[in-house]
Image (cartoon, rainbow, N blue to C red; front, side, top):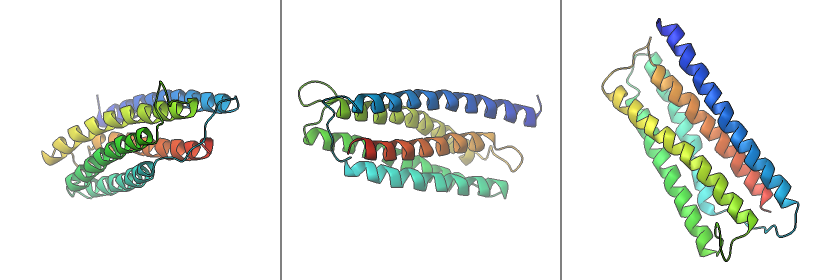
Length: 185
C-alpha cells in the first residue's frame, strides 16, 4: 500500500470515529436542553478549574500546530509533542480539581446533594476526559516515535492523526464549556 493511500485511509477512519463521538455528545447536550426545561434544574457556576482546563487545551493545540510545521521543515517536533502531552495531563488534573471543587460545594453525581444539572455536568466532563485519555495515550506513542526519529517530512502520519484528533477534542471541550456555562445559569 502506498503512503498516500494509507494516510487517506487512516484519516477517513479517524473522521468517522470523530463523527460518532460528535453524535454521542450531541445526544448528551440535547438531553441537557430537554431536562433543563423541567422542574428541579439547579443553577450554579462552573468550577474555576474548568476555565484553567480550557486555557490549557487551547494552548496544547497551538503546540501541535507548531509540531506539524516543524516536522514538515525537517526539524524534530518532539519538544512540542511532549509539551502537548504534559498540557494534556494538566487538563486531566484540572478536571479532577474541578470535580473536587463541585464536591466541596455539595454537588454530587448521585445521592444526597445531587441534582440533574450537576449529574449532567459530571457525565459530560467525564465522557470528554475519557476521550482525552485516549488522546494522551496516542500522544505518548507519538512522542516516543518522534524521539526515535521515526517521522520524516514525507511520512508523519502519526503526528497528523493526533493533531486532527487533539484539535477535535479542543473544539469539543470549548463547545461543552460554553454550553455548560450557559446551561447551568
